Structure formats: C-alpha cells, structure tokens
Length: 232
Image (cartoon, rainbow, N blue to C red):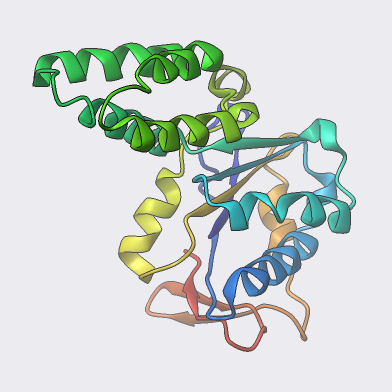
C-alpha cells in the first residue's frame, strides 16, 4: 500500500515522503497498519481522502470499518476502482469474444474506456451484459459482476474533476522498488498542501520509525510482522 499527498493541481506533493508499506499478517494486518499511519497523519484534518484499489473483496469490505474507526466524514471520502484495472477487465471481456477480430476488440474496449471516463458506468455494464451469451457467457458474467459490484466506485469523471488520481500508478512504481505488496493507494488532499509535509514528519516513539541510509528514508511501522519500506 502507499499513502501520499497531492496538491491543489492533483500533482503528487514532492516535499511529502510517501508511506509505502506492506505486511505478512494478512488483510487485517494491512488495515491495522493503514489505520496506524492515517492516525499519525491526523487524516481527519485532510480536505479530501481518496481510496484507490483493485476489485479485491478483502480491501473494500474493510473500508467502512476503517472510516468509522478514524472518524472520517463520509462526504470527504472517495472510493475508486483503479481505472487501469477496470480497463484490463474490459480487455478480458473483449478477449472472450472469439468471433471478433483484433481491430473489433480494440474498438470495443476503446469505446467502453471512453464511457467510463465520462461517468457512464451504467452504459458499460449494459454493454458487457449484451455479450453474456454463447460458449463464454459464464466467464463474461463474471466480468459483468465485477463492474456491477463496483459500480459506485466507477466515478472517474467526478474524481478527475477534483484533480485527484484515477489510478494506482504510484503503487505500481513502488512495487518495482519494494517488492510484493498490496495494490492499494490512499491519496490525501490538504488545504494549501504546503503545510502538510511539516506535520507528517512527526513520528511517535512507539509508532513508525525512520532510518536514513544513503539518501533514502526507510520506514518501519512499529507493527510486528511488517516489512521495512522506502519512504522517499
């Protein structure tokens, strides 16, 4: 997982060292870790909070409990399916249409991709539903259910208009540096953004810690079973 701050223009705040971490304690361990970090960042003072992840049940099923535990106002929290994962699932649907040519598959995916960006998720679900027939109908229904289940997390146009990221590109990059970890992002938008970095440098003695080696900050959450992670 990764936690980072964006400025008013939606750009990643360079003066804020993102939290990149993971653990070996399963889903509950990941959310225990996440809760600790967000508490230490005084997340309640943030302007907007965006959770971006793939469609994994274990992630989204735990978000309501996390929000309640942190005391976050629902109107400031956004949940979003990773856009690029959604497009991958569209590609899977097109790939199951064996009678289509490569050009037809690309055209269909491109059209549905555009609809997602315009906030027309219902039309995308309907387009997938129309393909639920023939030999691969069961596999296509699985993909349809993926979009139906996450329909409220497909508000890409709304989130983009807020200058917030619609994908988890930050964690994709981090995986190459850190190794295997949960593909889960938390993006924070704070008023002014300039004052945020000073606040997040504070770490409690019994919580996360930092070691500075060769120009790189290595963070440890203080939770047994978690891994050291690159913070800057």
